[in-house]
Length: 216
Ligand SMILES: [Zn+2]
Image 1 (cartoon, rainbow, N blue to C red):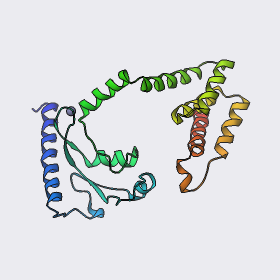
Image 2 (image 1 turned 180 degrees about the vertical axis):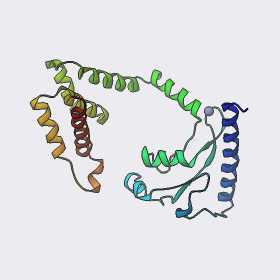
Image 3 (image 1 turned 135 degrees about the horizontal axis):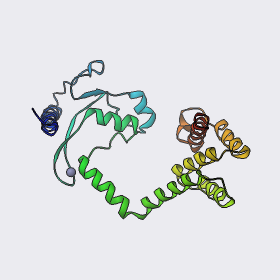
Image 4 (image 1 turned 30 degrees about the vertical axis):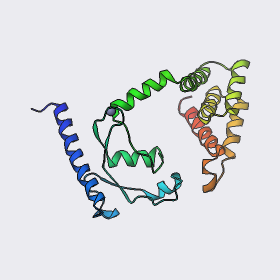
């Protein structure tokens, strides 16, 4: 019986081989890539151009599909494959820029994240403030707590503003709920305004209110 570890190593080896071969073909310009409607072959994923055009503000061509890409980890040099599935997730779910690429293996990515978390005061600060705002929602609002949530709502970090909205929803009360409904009502329509804070705020308020209903 093969161990899971062996099996994973074999899958990785096959993936690397396949990705190298497909990179080779791309280099030779003999680009016999599958048609989008046929792009279900191993190592290929069809791209959703509608989603890409909404989120990836690029003047370049959007891909019809993703292909497994081989790369060497920037930190440890290990040979890796950025799979078509991972690319689809990166560009279409996380909305990573269409020209961004994987540069580190999973182990080095985790190590780096851990390092940054401990090394960069700003990253820590944002997390601490997020935790703090969330914790405020556990207790009844004091004057001090209300002032902090208000300040967060005016602050420059959208992620903190969203937590402030969630905290207001958890507190409830007439004026907080009225404020959330006001944010919801101010949701802008139309493509260009998609990135506006008002849209983010409206959606955050809506889901915070829905959570209130689900867990009274
Ligand atoms: Zn690495």
